[in-house]
Length: 302
Image (cartoon, rainbow, N blue to C red):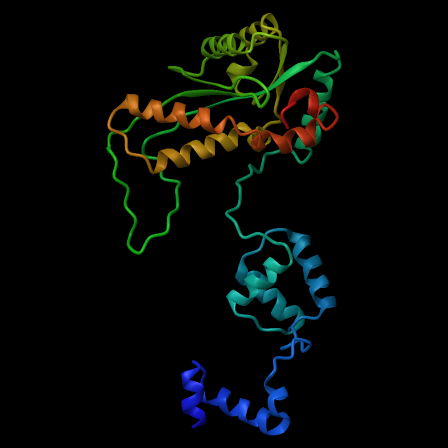
C-alpha cells in the first residue's frame, strides 16, 4: 500500500515510508513542511568562503578544475566540476572567454591615457568626443558560437571578400563608416574630411591608435586644419578604444551571414555598423572612467 501510494504521487518507495513514520509519530502535523530547517549544511563555512574569495582574487583568472583543486587542497572539501562552478558563481565570478591582452601593453596604460585626455582638454573648449579605427573584416570569419543538436553548418558563398573599413564612433554626434583601398595617410586624411562633413560644428576630440598613418605629419596637419584634437592610445592597448566592441559585434554578424556578391558583403557591414554605432553603452564606461567630470558635456544623451 505504501509503495503504491507513493508511486501515484510520483515519489519513490522510501519517501512513502518516511511519510508513514512521521504520521505515526506526529500525525498530520508531521507531514507539514518545516521551512525553518536549513537543510544540508554547506561544505564551506562563511569564513572559509571569504578566505577562498581572497585566494581567488590574488591571481584573477582560474579554470574550473584549478579552482576545484584549490578548494580541495586548502579546505579538504571535494566538489564536482559542476558544484565548483556554482560556488564560483555565488562568489560573484563570471565564466567567459578571456579577452586577449598584449604582453607589451604598459602597466600604466589607463593612467597614461587619462593624462593625455586631460592635456587635450587644457584649452577649455567644448569638444565632440569620437573614436576612430580601421579593420578589415573577411567573409571567411567564423567567430559565432551556436547551440545545435548536430554539427552546425553555415550556408555561404565560399568566395572570399575583404573590406578595408574605416569607422568613426561618436556617441553624441554622427558616427560614420567608410571603405578605402588602403590605410595610408591620404586615406586617413580623406576620412577625417568625411567626419568633419558629418559633424560640422565645434571641435572634435579624436581617440585613435598609434598606426603610422595616424601619426603622419600630413594627418596631424589635416586634423589641425579641421579643428580636431588627436589623442593617441598607449601602445598595444586597443581595448581602450570602445569602437573595438563595435568591430567584434560586426564580425559576429558577418560570421553567420550569406554573401552572394561583394556589394552584398559591403552593404551588410555598413548596415551592421550603423546599427551598432547607435548604442551609447559601448562608450559609457569609457567616458565615466576617463572623463568623469565632463561626461555630460561630451555625451549629453547618457
